[in-house]
Length: 177
Image (tube, rainbow, N blue to C red; front, side, top):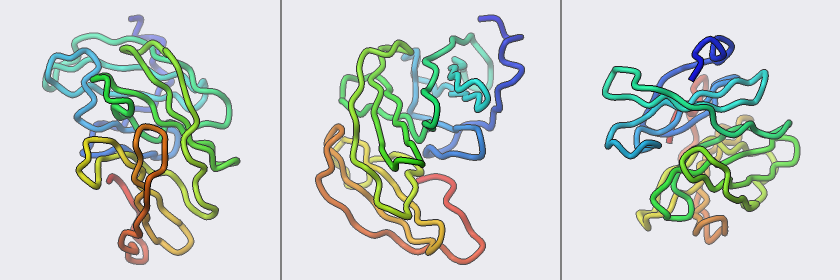
């Protein structure tokens, strides 16, 4: 991988969930693209919409590859094994249409996609995690006006239920599920 091409990419790290910060995405530590048992970094360039993965060995960069380029108007909202095939997939969100989509990946190769549920008006898709313990990733939503959170329980790309989460205190934002 030619690292000089990564000079425009905004990198912000790894966390316990996934979330959007400006033009950057941070992916959950369970995102192990090269299956070495260690979390990898997912990078996103907001200007070109290009994704990349840095393979990590603890704190050491062990290599990297470019991933799919996102379509215009879409953001990378999370990374999770949505179809339970043992490989990480991209969860996308289009804030203009409120549509969500799942890109199924084999490594970093796009192998198929499907639309997920349309996000409720006033809410943003902030990340993915398995909130109800069924082994499938769910959506965490935030209404920035009211600071109200909501969980949408999914089975692959199908909405199966919802619950309101707590309202965030004034002045605070949702960083990670």
